[in-house]
Amino acid sequence: MNTINRRQFIQLLGGASALASSFGITACSRQPAASGRVVIIGGGFGGATCAKYLQRFDPKLDITLVEPKQQFVTCPFSNAVLGGLRDMNSISHGYQAHEKRDIKVIHAMAQEIDPAGKKVVLDNGKTLEYDRLVVSPGIDFRWEDVEGMSAADAETIPHAWNGGPQTVIFHNQLTAMPDGGVVIIAPPANPFRCPPGPYERASMIAHYLKQNKPKSKILILDAKSKFSKQPLFMQGWEQLYPGMIEWVGGTQGGRVTRVDPASKTLYSELGEEHKADVANFIPPQKAGAIAHKAGLVDSSGWCPVNQRTFESTVHPAIHVIGDASLAGAMPKSGFAANSQGKVCAAAIVSAMGNTRMPDPSYVNTCYSLLSPDYGISVAAVYRYAADKGIYKVEGSGGVSPMDVDEEFREKEARYAKGWYASITSDTWG
Ligand SMILES: Cc1cc2nc3c(=O)[nH]c(=O)nc-3n(C[C@H](O)[C@H](O)[C@H](O)COP(=O)(O)OP(=O)(O)OC[C@H]3O[C@@H](n4cnc5c(N)ncnc54)[C@H](O)[C@@H]3O)c2cc1C
Image (cartoon, rainbow, N blue to C red):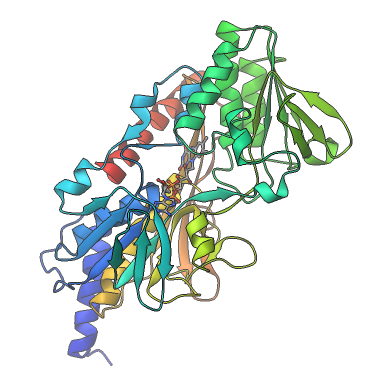
């Protein structure tokens, strides 16, 4: 009973090596290199992390990262740009560190995936062959579900739910708005990218307005009847921005059913009209377009995956991670995508080396800044079980307490900045 055969021993060794590496430990007995070709679509939180850790776990792999942007602008801390706390440069990250690790970075869009032929066709005319493919394209918008507005109208009514030009448009509109203006933020129903994001956004805009345009107001027309860290946000708003932010829940008339971009008017389900000086309509979401084109999605619009390895349950040898995937209890966050990128890298190296990796565990913390010195958070640890997929570990993490002093909130604001520095260094550094 206590003896194990040679094959089981090699499997254990391989699994231990992958696990050790995922915690930043260099194992002395690295498993034999599994040479093979891995292509990764998307150089955001999920894809860039996965590429880096694949190379770490098996330096002999031939890894190609496909990402159109030369500089990735993060959504995390883009709200701080709207609040005037950061500039765009400080939330932009390049791929030099990946190139130094001999990861091939191709700045192009993946146009087609051929799962049977194991090929990816790029918009620059090139075709890449793979043994394993990782798809981490983030989100796309369900414009088809929005009456009166299309993707082209995002120039007038920015969603700013992808970092980059949309953040700049939104920022410029806020700085051009007269004092006394009304900013409307309209968050979508669940599930969507970054559940606390719209409310951190309201806080950061309020911080900017309080200093520069104190007669202005923020109206949140929410499709939902409750939201992430709600009591903490509301407590903070009352303390920091009394009377400036009004939240209307879905059943009270918050659900927006039509938008008129020309007049910046949002119409609610109850027939009310709300005219904005600056409108931020955040459309309902689905997995990034390439996932739909490749048939990786189910009827929910997101990608079902094996919860242990992130391999698609539709097409073998293709793994989907990050926001695009259906990852059990995990939220759609950058930290979650980073965590999944590492597990997916271990799963691929194990699969290619024909070893079994140990059951994974994951972490997520979402910090939100309410002002430069006022932070709150929600954290959790997740594990995998065959009968329930990825589940939240009971008693792990939790939200910040309600009754604490200023120093506690100030510390969490500092941790938020520390988190950003460390996750971006882990992903792109
Ligand atoms: C305002 C806001 C604040 C946020 N704050 C936080 C936070 O504080 N903490 C946190 O953890 N998360 C936060 N998030 C969420 C976080 O940004 C996302 O969850 C994260 O980016 C998801 O990673 P991803 O790899 O799935 O997608 P992304 O990071 O969006 O990366 C997808 C990449 O794929 C590329 N791509 C798409 N299609 C193709 C294709 N066909 N070919 C090649 N490349 C392609 C895109 O160009 C993009 O670079 C925030 C989000 C928002 C909107």
